[in-house]
Length: 145
Length: 435
Image (tube, rainbow over all chains, first blue to last red; front, side, top):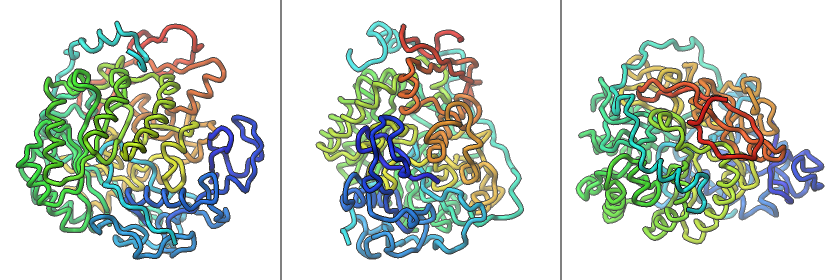
């Protein structure tokens, strides 16, 4: 699985292992395009967006984090990995009606060690937003740890 | 008119063009396939992925006649689920740890038991949402939905009054939508808006956003009109892939304006992919960019007769994994081939440009629905900003040409081909000529 981050020069996403942007040829400093931290449990859509907003806010630069590449894994989205990625504490994030799970995993979900999939690299991610259906009510972003 | 890929004369012609009459306006849906095969074994990946977001067509009955409607909604399906079956399905969704359930149609409120369904969803702690064309959200309906626990509603606005009414197929539907928004807000239901982007609506995007901002709506979901159902009958209204070259810089500015208005832009998953505006549009998603199609991984689609799909938009015939009257939701989710599709898909399953794209491993041709209804096969999606930019860099553009009509059934599609041609020259519509 490749990891992508925006080129600081042209903003096209590039693999974080690139030394030069394949689109604008700008030299790339790997320190500036480290991959993002990921939530560690299943999140509702509003919570996913709020988590992303937190990552952007907390990142040291260029919308990135300092999470080492080997800590980044698809399974993190569904995991129970606590705050290894710098996630807020479990009870720090509930939406305006208290229904959304945030990182507290109020709705549960298979823990990350519920069984590594046999397919190995099969995606376990939310994908992007469904076209039909409604945008969720915004959740306030979680407090920064 | 500025910001339009077509001339004023062509726009006027399309605005006034009568609805195609060669197909029935509101066909009756054929009964879906039943007793579909399920795999004997459940794999760890099938147990690990769970639907987060369910989008449920609770009836195909509709009080609008949208000329881009992919499901050709109007008449209820034969054999729609009973109230008891609906409530049982809600219970099963809760058992699957679904977090949000969007009710769609048709028009969800045309089912007499829609309030009961909302109540049951809320009772389980799941979030009930509603997507509506907004022709008939009266104060009474809004109040009942609020009391039942409806958390938010998304109302369609597709342009100014004339364009919206033209696209929605009913005069006065724009005013009705605004009235519905007012009624929902009056009872305290947060409201968002969704907008189709096509050659008729595209000049009005800025105006729609100002309307949304003025009304105090919380989000704006945008999506490209896709060549399914009635939209396939009028392909000249659809964008061409190269129209994205002009669209995305505008979306970037619209996102800035959204931020000023405190309206959250919510791009649907056929808004893509990986061009220079990806961070602008999806920078607040955890990865900071799109990540392929969520059908059967995080998204669940349900048709009114109990057919289960990975995404509500996907055509019934090819993408139904089973029927809730034949098997449990859990079994269909875990053991049906159509719902496993995106769990198992690899780059090897892509074709055309997408097969060799720099982003193939992450994107996997983006929206499965958009590509499938064009070519009858998923895995090659010309509606991509990155792809349009790369063609443009070579002095080329891709044009989509309709080769076969859709048969005129709910969730049907025609067949299209891609023409790669020099970018200079006229701006033909999809309907014009074979390659």
